[in-house]
Image (tube, rainbow, N blue to C red):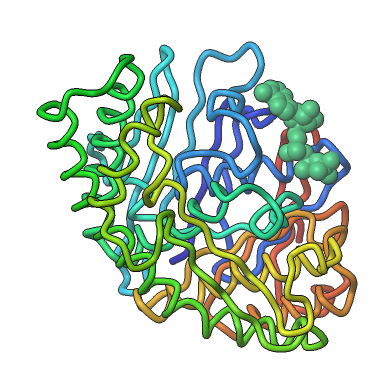
Length: 360
Ligand SMILES: Nc1ncnc2c1ncn2[C@@H]1O[C@H](COP(=O)(O)OP(=O)(O)OP(=O)(O)O)[C@@H](O)[C@H]1O
């Protein structure tokens, strides 16, 4: 899939930007604080419903502005053109897909796949488990459509069980048991789908890690499902009920899942340098994009924020080589065109104080 056009208004310093993007490599150059990353955030927002930088979606709203909007025309591999929009007006966020208001953000996010490597990406390896669950679930959401239903059922039941646990005293069996049954049923589906996803994803990540981090030896992705292996979630929930009541929340289940990336010669995450964490995160992100391409028949759009300051030249060249010969749209930012892209065919935009202009 490829963005043909992108229109952005009221997002950070971008007031009224209208871009026609090239199907291959698009480079956004400009001084610090010019608005380059904000262009990538706009594309990412359509695909994830949030920014890749921390904070709530609302921080994207330009200071003093009352509305924000991002519109895109996205060309799919089979020739279909999707018109996508997400905006905030009068304090409400609303998504549009092909001229219709979308009932949920899910409909928008499902139509658009963007993966982004950015200065905070090492958190995928070294950050909290929430980052890794989000990574897994976003990928699964795009390749396994029944996942969203199970995930929603699980979130609803979790909220209800937690409310009963917080109500004080022992939760009455007739009230909590039905929610535990729902949690167990939807949780087992989520777990099975995540397990299968990791199994399918691993070879893609491993192949990339072998070429970019060969010194670390074989990669191992170990999935931790959030409760004891070999036990039914229903049993564990019932057994933990009173302990969970004293804590006021549910302490087991897929909402506590995680995965651990380790290497033959670096069995602990703490053995990786910051640069190796970044490269490992990059292998995960490009691996996820490659798996998406295998499962869906088309590559997601790939964003590389501040490429030149994140990776040394050898690894910049490595990532460019991974992307160049494939039918992938890439959006890259940098204070100048990264060295690895100097001789590559590309379209360059200059960003200055929130304005974006194409360079000849
Ligand atoms: N909510 C906001 N409203 C208005 N301006 C904002 C808001 N949030 C951030 N900014 C400003 O928007 C500008 C764009 O930041 P952005 O991160 O996109 O720049 P950049 O070109 O990627 O910079 P760098 O090279 O330093 O990473 C910055 O000057 C920042 O101060």
